[in-house]
Image 1 (cartoon, rainbow over the protein chains, first blue to last red):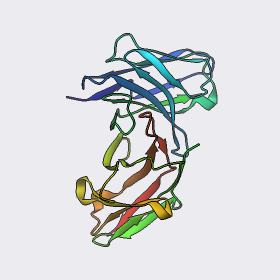
Image 2 (spheres, chains in turn cyan, green):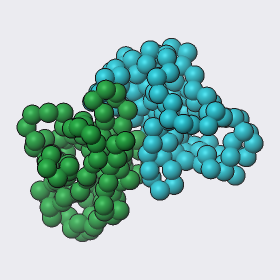
Image 3 (tube, rainbow over the protein chains, first blue to last red):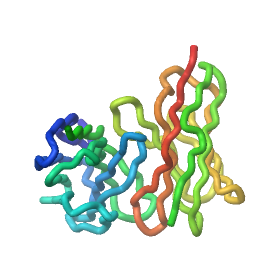
Image 4 (cartoon, rainbow over the protein chains, first blue to last red):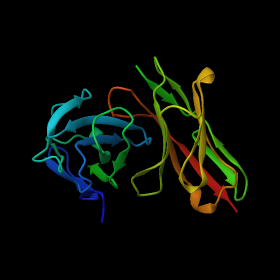
Length: 114
Length: 113
């Protein structure tokens, strides 16, 4: 009964490729997020979606394109992968977009670009 | 812009000893404050959060944190550490308007026998 699930858990790919990471939440939440954790474990918000609508885009390169087909899913597509994209990507969800709402995180996808 | 500082990159504590992890934040007003824990290869789990009211907040796994407005701090404490507490701990702040989080750089807790 995983609340927030991401696939794949590990992804190794070559520079220049295009890849997608999928995220699904079964909590009935309205808001979903993508966070990036770099090699120094620093976590930073990338995107936030509320009811399938983009509400926050934190100056992420446009090679990153999130897609939310419904409010239970938020996929992350990355074009033309670069070495610097190597990181752990976390999907999360919360009840709504209001401040202070608890976020539930997936287990992360470790992306390695070679 | 808001920011979070966790001054200790890693801390080693003997099993059974007490623990305090430091967190300082910078924000124009009182934000929402959180502590998350990340075990190796796992996602983040919420330990506790502060919104308002009592400045001493109780969380899961025997953790507590105290909000001190005058020091802009939200330190995490546990009276007796267990080996299973070894993990990375992240302090985070959230603005009152949106649910996105700004994280500190984390403190790695090592527990020695």
